[in-house]
Length: 316
Image (cartoon, rainbow, N blue to C red; front, side, top):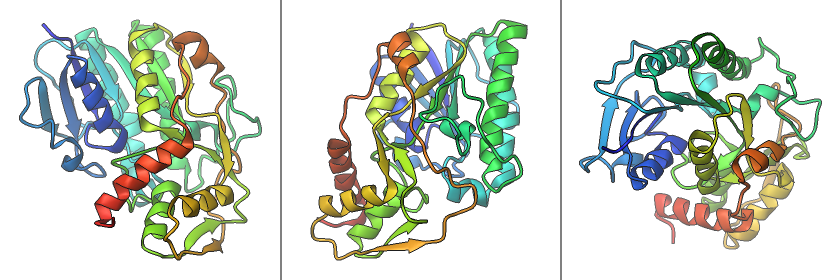
């Protein structure tokens, strides 16, 4: 019998790619999503196929999955600032109640669970690049605190279940990830810039653009998650991301060179509250534990992403 895996947030950007990967690997995949930010379009190609089931359900409620369950990937959560600023309480609930329900299910089913944490647990970091041992610099009552603290609580609860109940857990601290199936309106920098450039609108750079990010293509991230779940029993957080750092201003300029027909200009806007000044993962642990590091260059990843967004906008 194929191994059975539950993926929450299955209709989201990362969750849908995980559904693809585990289905292609021969797993029976159960996707769960309340569709608050996800889209059935992302998994439409799987619906109706064997070994895939979709459940339209809110994971903050009691979660029941009939039969045996080998693995759980808990990826349900708003992930972009536009979404979690619009849904602050729901974001806190899915990080707390949703995590509690998934851990309870893992305990009942004797399943291994991997939880999607985030580089945002580091806040506006005072350590650069960021290692897993760094405790972070988070404003718990700032506007971004609803997401940051939800994920920090998620990690704490996962480790408590591991220590007290012996649940096999994995924690992925995911850095900026991009690629096909991102929403053009999700508020993150890459779809913002690409959408603006394709529509010949000004590219909005916040602050002076000197703040940095590190972008990992979705296929590389999925490979890291796959290895973290199946190739190690390490229960503590592991950074997954691309350590190649770039300033936001430089990134905007790169986008314009990739879309040469764009008539867009770069404009500068006030920096949002608690926006991190730097973000770069130290992936030494992932290299050691998983024999993993990103393979797809930013140039290649951007070309693939721009092609996807051209199709979404009906632009050749």
